[in-house]
Amino acid sequence: MKKILVVSPHADDEVLGAGGTILKHVQEGDKVYWINVTNAKEEYGYSKEEELQRRQEIEIVAKKYGVEELINLGLEPAGLDKYGMSALVRKFAEIMKQISPQIVIMPFQYDVHSDHRIVFDAVYSCTKSFRYHSIEKILCMEILSETDYAVSDKGFVPNYYVDISPYIEKKIEIMKEYKSEIKASPFPRNVEAVRGLAKYRAAGCNVEYAEAFWLLKEIEK
Image 1 (cartoon, rainbow, N blue to C red):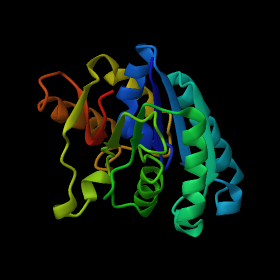
Image 2: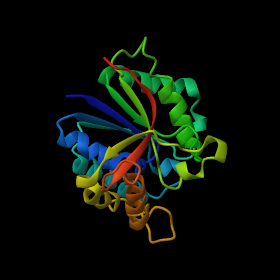
Image 3: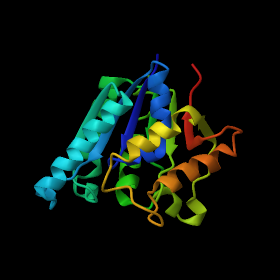
Image 4: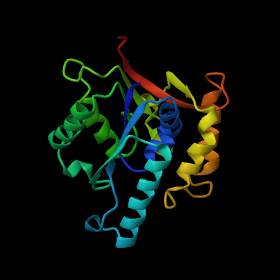
């Protein structure tokens, strides 16, 4: 049994980038911990209804995954630069020490959204092997509408694949829980695009459907 820590800057990033992988780990008996970094709140300019809807969506999604624990930090969306890097590192470091995960899954370093890049920098600072001895593997997710907008010389080149063929329908079912985030094509976060990306990545590893990652580090123990 391994502990997997998945860090999503925004709710829906985790399903787009690693939904099938989360389901696979849970099915195999691993413990998955999910940190959702930001959330819609009235204090951030969202309506009370939007705040309630997002909170309910996240709780439903967590149950459908079967995660061991949901850690909802509730920070401001598109406003992570307001908190300061040292404060964010302290938050993630505390959680990392409590959980002691073997696998960490986080956003890609060069995603176009500033929240994603900030989360990468903060979380990666908490993966130093001489301080966080449990970590064996660090993976960066591929997130539709963010990773694909990385500048050309910093583009996402996957080197690690997970066969999610048995979990693709459940992944899409979970994505549909985010009513405000999934829309019809040509909006990038749509059912056809989610399925299409998984089919495309599968061609690189000889399976039916796959999720692709950038393997940042792996330590054989």
